Length: 303
Image (cartoon, rainbow, N blue to C red; front, top):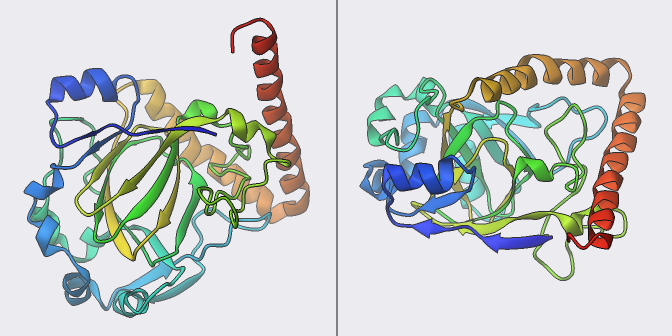
């Protein structure tokens, strides 16, 4: 993999953001945006336990999906307050995602501002909370609705690996899914990581970004970006989603949600092993085409 750092700014004008990041689909970390919000100091474990501690939530482990795994299916359920107690005690490989906190505590919507100076099309009904214990992992995927994301970290640190959507076959995307076949767990370690370069040779061609998010950092993640996240500390983040301005992006997102996802779920229920093997074969075939194209360009002097 060829990785570079993500640009970081404390503040940025709307014109500069649009020209240099929004229009070219380039990620950016804005460090000063959330510092202006009441949530920056107010939101912590005790606060959330007080306002939504009795809410039942789905929790997810670190196990990657297999032939039988429907997308976004929780591995267990518990009260949010009990979950907070669990991850505060130490490493706990459990996370919560797509939790609409504001359905249960609408009064806290006033604790932040929508960054409408940077994007229109915010889906204001669905600001989402993402929570993880130390050591928990969000495996490599892209968001199914193809929205732009403003992802703000609260408490703790989180390691993030990013790739543009176009790198999908070098990342071994499983067709009809938003997931990679590769396990990127601890990719940054010389030993102990789960990457298998012999099995997944196209990975070496993938070009992306890596970064660490800390309390108050807001990551602009353009639509379709692949992302893998590992919680260095127990923490939580909020994602604000904005629909793409062009109609094509909206149509593709709708197809993923209401077409691709249901076809994949149906096939997993009716022919799980055949469907999994078909997708795996196509995954490697697509990656092979990327490697052949690279070899062709290299021989022609274009690498």
